[in-house]
Length: 599
Image (cartoon, rainbow, N blue to C red; front, side):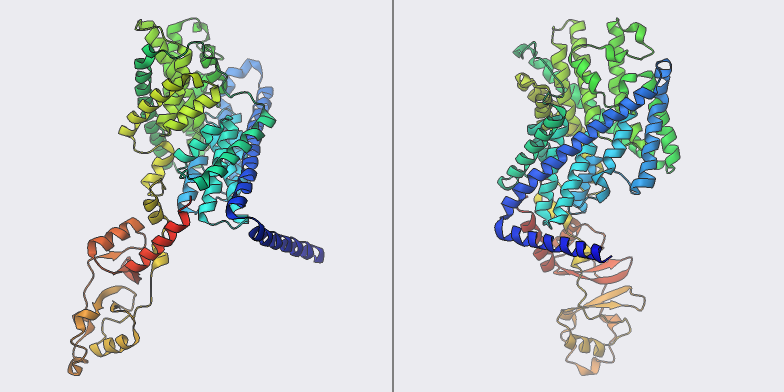
């Protein structure tokens, strides 16, 4: 016991000395630079672990499956995998494991960048079981969740302030995306577009270093090959431009369909309170879909690579439609089916209790959309276009539309495929897809639910600061409170003690009956004959404008502007809590602006 105390005391002293050394010898920017490298390494290792854990899980599953029942086992595998996830969450993690990127966005907007510690490992385990057993989701979300959890942990350990904590989360996010996709440029763009960090001179170096360090870590363990090897056989020709515009419009509408279906199934499963019923409904539905269309199984990266190579055999492999593999019309029908059903399979995976990301399903739908579009144009005889090129560009269109991130779509597809020769059509298709989807859905899949709950931070710094301010923390209670039965005499005594010119009138149950303003009784307090004759109840009034502690700061600011008052009462279910002053709100706002000014 004494040894344990000695060790704890020694480690604490070492830690204190390190902090002192850091403050004396390292500037804030220098320390953040070093920390971003550490975050990049940890994010890269997280990506490597998740990738290898999924690969080993899939190998173990395939080893246990006999060839005779392989097609039928598709029905049971996803249910088994998601059941294991539910058990791990219930008995090991003992806390809800949320989807990766929305978790990061929520922590930034509502938890000041603090991410629960179980995310250091929980997403690795649960996503490996989900995807390893055939769940129709991706790995980028869990990788981001794990990387940012380590970034948040480091920020907590080194006692970073809010702006630097958010910078570490953004760096971890960029590192995780760079490592999982081997796309360092796209990862930085993603952090700016989706995580919504402001790209300033202060934040640029940590983002660059974290992204570069993470991708080098990924190269070291996973090799330097691009994720989707693609050889540009036919370069961009100007005559194809109208078709790339049409592809952008098509992928925009597919993105709208994606978002609507995702929200539709999310609403359905939220109404199912029983986890067992969710597993049966979601897992059973997913099993049926995968049994009928095996290409929906798992992440779908092998299918994407085959499609980019112009090989459509993945649509028929282990399928009931295998005998039709030489028929192009059958392939086109199956392409349309898997495009429409992939988001259904993904939503069922999430609804049943699986953990994963939406990047892989988005890429899968995009590559198949591009391939189907090109095949239709060629078959109808409008023009002979390259199916492979359009399959590649289709992925950029879906990423731009589903994520509301056209730059991420452009750079990600160029990075992961090496297809920079097609940069112009990437830009055209991604832009038109984004324009279409913005007309129908103002927020992306990642952002829409947070936006509905007013929990989303954006690049609008003023709105962000207002959202970060807590109404309850600004309530002032140093007001003289009077009961309704009080007289003018009681009020004059309260005035002698008070340094405020407002006097709330509150009954014995704590409910606000009204308030008295100093200006309204100034002439009466010098008339002693009225002291015992006039009751406070005759002088008080109920304010037209008041604040509920559950109001957002945006609502509070609007109430101050509409009322023209300098102080507003705070009332919750009729109960008096105090006042909030315009001056206090403004002072707090200025402090918050300064605290985030370099993020």
